[in-house]
Each structure stands twice: as structure tokens, then as C-alpha cells.
Length: 157
Image (cartoon, rainbow, N blue to C red):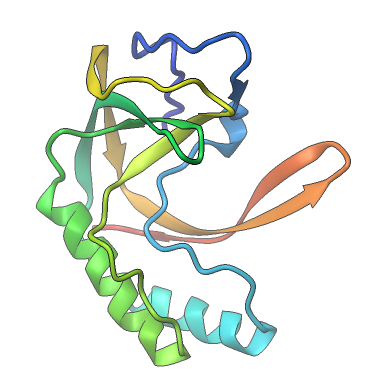
């Protein structure tokens, strides 16, 4: 996965914003939350069964979620292959008791927290990202901050 830096895309963040470390940048397909180990084993098994195509993702929009004070980078056109991957994974995870989000899927990369509002607009320099795998990420909080760790990843064809 290619790391997309906010400044590389032409996004300007206020000084008070807490940038997400490059190692933690990601695009969420489904937020699972805390689960039992047995459920996690089931989810990993279901993720292995996903049969989806690789695709190109154009990161060409910027904006923020005002209430949560999160700045993000996203796409103006969501590739059908991304929607198919997200949908198929959600369907498979339901076999493990997971309930997918009811709201429409809006892919984005969180780039900063505690950010002042940013109007949704095109970024100055779009970034193209070749997506050829997806992963299960474990998030742990520690005194050093939040750390993301890839538990397992699966290729797209």
C-alpha cells in the first residue's frame, strides 16, 4: 500500500490538528470493534473466502467530519470493485455474527484528528493508489499512542 501524506495531496491542516502517523493511514472496509477470539477466527476464515478484483483508487477529495473533528482524504468516484469488496466482505462476516453498518459506505482515509473544519473540495494533487490486497488490522492503545498492526492480509486478483 502506498502511503498518502496530506501535504502530498495539497491538503492544508491547521497547526493544532493531530496528524495520523503514516504507519496508521488506512481505508476501512468494515469497523469490527472488540470481538472474542472465536469470533475473530471465524472472521479471518470468512475473509479468506472473499474473491474480489484489484482496482485503482483515486484519492482526489478532502474534507472533514465536523462533529468528530476528523480531517480526511477520499475519492469523488468510488470504484465498483471497492464497493463489491466491501459488500462481499460484509456479507461473509455476517456468518460470524457481525452486523454491517446500515449507513451507506463512504470510503475515506483519516489523516488528522482534532482538526478545524475543512470544506469538502478537490485536492490540489490527486494520488492514485493500486489496491491489490485487504487486511485485518488490530488497533492497540498504549502510553506511546495508538498502534495499528496487520493481523492477516488477503490478495485481490
